[in-house]
Amino acid sequence: MEVSLVGESLKFMVLGMTIVFLFLALLVQVMKLQAKLVGKYFPEKEVVTTTSKSAALAADDSAKTAAIIAAITEFKKNKS
Amino acid sequence: MMLKKIFISLLFALVASSSVTYASEHVAPAEAPVAEKSAYVPKSLSELAVSFWQTTGINAFFDFNDGETTSEPKGPAYEKEMNWFESSLGRLIMLLIVFVLFYLAIAKNFEPLLLIPIAFGGFLANIPLAGMGGEHGMLGIIYNMGIANEFFPLLIFMGVGAMTDFGPLLSNPKTALLGGAAQFGIFGALVGAVAIGFGLQEASAISIIGGADGPTSIFIANRLAPDMLGAIAVAAYSYMALVPVIQPPIMRALTSKEERVIVMKTTRKVNRLEKLFFPILVLILAMFILPESTPLIGAFTFGNFAKESGVVDRLSNEMQNSLINIVTIFLGLGVGSKLAADKFLVFETLGIMIIGLLAFSAGTAAGVLMAKVMNKYSKEPINPLIGAAGVSAVPMSARVVSKVGSEEKPGNILLMHAMGPNVAGVIGSAVAAGVLLSIFK
Image (cartoon, rainbow over all chains, first blue to last red):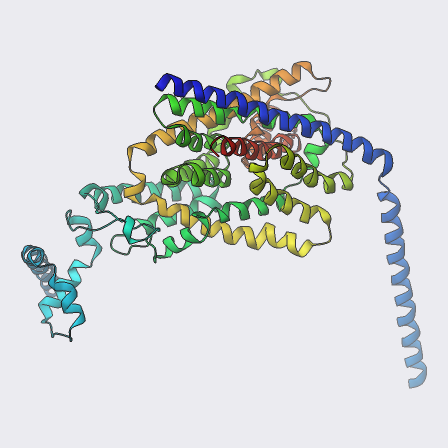
C-alpha cells in the first residue's frame, strides 16, 4: 500500500514540475515576444518627455517670477 | 520583615485551603451553575480568596487535572479536555520557544515583521484559562476572520504584488526558469512526506513549505489539511525567517569559487509598457493553463497592475503599506494562536518541521544546480548563486544571494539579477500550489 502511495507522489512530482516549467517557459517566450513588440512599436521616448516637462516647468516658474516682480513693482509704485 | 512573614503565611494558608477545598468541589460540580443564577450569596473572605486562587495562572499551571479544555476557534463543540502535559509543562516549553523566537527576531533580525507577531500570538495562546484562541477569544476572532477562510493570505499576495518590481525579470527573462527549478523542493518533499507515512493530501500541504512562501502555505494547508495548518504555517514562516542561515551553506557547497565570483552583465532598461502588460500576461496564462491558481495569482497580479498602471498610486500605496501591515499583524497573531501547546507539541509537528527543512534545502539546491547548467549553456555568464533565489521568499533570498556574492567578490552586486528568479519563484510556487489543488479537486 505504501509503495503505491510513493509511486503516486512520484507521478504528482512529474506532473507538477512539468506544469511549473511549462508555465514559466511559456512566460519566458511571452516576455521575449513582448519585449520585441514593445521595442518595435512603442520605443521609449523618455528623454524627450522629461526635457519637455522640465522646460515647461522652468517656463512656468519664470512666468510666475515675472508676475511676482510685476506685482511688487506695481505695489511700490502705488506706495510712493 | 514582619509584613513579609505575614504574607508568606497567608500564601501558605491559601495553598493549603485550596487543596482541601479542591476535593470537595469535585464531588458537586453541578451546583456551580445553579449558584450562579440564584441571588447573590454572601461569601466569607476565605471563600473569596480560595475562588480567586483557583482563577490564577499559578494554580492552572500546577494543578494538572483541573479539567481545562483546549480553545478552538471553531467553537466549544470542538474543544477537548487537556491532558496534564498540555496544561502545564507543554505550556512552559512553548513559552521558552516563544522567547527563542523573540531573540531571533530582535537580536538576529530574522524577519522580525513576521516573528514578533507570531511569537507574541504564541505567548497569548499559551496563557491558561483566558481562552484567547477560542471562538470568542481575541486570537480566535482574528483566526476566523481571515485565516480559516484563506482571506489574509490573498491580501498579503496583493500587497506583495504591489511591492514587486518585475523589471529585473523582464530584462532577463530566462532567469524565470530558475524560479521553476526551485519548486523541485515542493515536489521532492511531497515524495519524502509520503514515504514517512503522511497521507497524500497532508503530504501535499506540508510540501508547499518548500516554496518558502508563507501565504501560499496557509492557503494550501487550509484546503488540503486544515488540522495541520498551525504547524505548517509556523514551519513556513520560520524557514522564511531562517533563509539567511539555511541557504548560504547549501549555496557554497554546490558551487566553486570561480562560479561564485562570476560578474553578470548589467541589465537592460525595461520599457514601462512591458511592466504594465506583464501582470495581465501572467494572469492570462494562469487563466488558460491553471485556473486553480488564479486566486493567488489574481491577487498578486492585481497588486502589481495597480502599481504599474501609474494612475492609482493611492491604491497601490495603500496595498504595499497600510494594508499589508495590518494584515501582517493579524496573520501573525492568528498563526501564533496555533502555537498553543496542545496543538503544536504533537508528534506530527516534528515531522512537518523536518520535511519542511528538507523541502526548503532541496529547493535551494535545485535552483543552484539549474543555474550551474544554464551558466554552461548560456552565452552570457550566469552566476549560479542566483539560482538560490528561486525559492519565493521575496526579497529575503535575493538579498542573501547578493550578500554571499559580495562576500566572495566585493563590489559584485547580484541583487537585481537575483530578483528575477525570486519573483519568478513566487509565480512558480503559486503554479505548483495550483497543480496540487487541481489534483485533489
